[in-house]
Image (cartoon, rainbow, N blue to C red; front, side):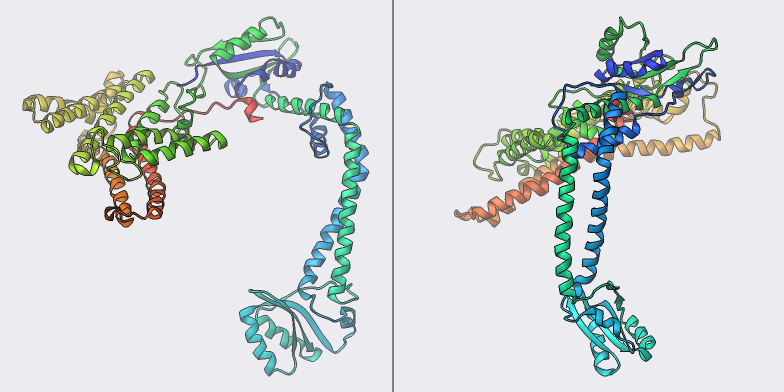
Length: 634
């Protein structure tokens, strides 16, 4: 169901807004609306604009939390100015330590980059400082892909003017250094570039061999890590020395800065007589919470409020807040995927829960596999809070129920007796029952559309929509005739069939002019040629009749998947050699896992498709806006 809402207009002195938020509004869930949006046509109203003087201190407080155990609470209370002073003073004490930390961190970064550059060349047993003494020989470090390196080897073997020394390799690259005469440098660099040789700049300050330099760098890296840890401990000691004060200051500034955001929803009045400015807040609340808040504020002379009901002039569209029992909570996931109901629309969560799980059980009827779904889904929902797992658990209950009706236990069809029928024992009967079941669901969806249209006061949709009263009469009479024919009873007179089907169908075709006539509009027919209107109406009529037929036949899949489940488990039992008397239990177990996982997924998707396309599309718009409480936004 949808929680009943009330719109509160709260006003008071501008400087009192923070007290009101902290003392009253933070206790409740309120969906604030922008007051300026509703009052932008008034000249004496402006946005509530202020500078947050505590923003910088709040940011510094968040940085200080890194040095503290934020799970510890404090009973110390401070005012905003005191909190700002505490945070800034502790930050100043830490400034010197943090500067040293940043310096050490930068040295660590540079050293790690240097080590990455030199690492591929550790096998070069040569003091690199001596390379800088070469005057007639040019050298270059780099890497080349393995596939290109084989071609380079052949080229080097044939060319006496180049020497390539391999230092390291992996599956993709070979690292090394090449030497060429200075006189041949340009042409040989071009050749190396054609082999996609990527140059790497090795640091110029190396004096020893790369391995010796790398070893020294590791020692230096460890020293920097120790220095960083020492500075971190020093910073923590400074912060912990005033831990209680800092935590209290952070709590105060958190509350202040969070409440400060409420100003973007508020508006301010500018009295002509020069009096003090007043703030204005608009917010939707659950009706029961609104009553409690009003009682809390009743004796506060600084606050004025006005209560407005949804649908009153100027109230706007209320947000939607779903309120369902715990067993229906998981099914709100599927409703939200389609779209939340509008405030005056019917909540389809109960309908979704009943029809989805029922169809899932019909299509996936097995006592054993259903019980696994119940237990596994319940555990995941309980431990991880997965709403989809909760849906699977409830659907598993129907799977167990229909498993008893079908006499199926982990694919064994002879262990327990069928309380109703074996789906593969009467294939045509199974499919016909599925179609009849689908027709009943479509009729229920049409009835729900009539209720929704009446609540929304959309009388054209109520009377002349293909899912309204006209469609309900037309489709319902056809279904009734089909049931009479299948059960061997006589059909009504042809004139009665023609009237009961033809008149509602004609009303559906003339939906637009009839709606205009009912609403007493000046123009009954839409603009344009009337002949073209009737041509389009005939085409639409064909589409309506075809949609009735296809939507009904679409429910054949409910019976088809019931047959499919029995058939797939029959294949598993055949492969396991059940008929021979000595079944392979490994195949039976793996087959059950495969069928339950694969078919369970497919059935879940197919049932959701039936819900959305065959039923929801008939009665549900899903155009509601979600209720987002200010506390949750923070």
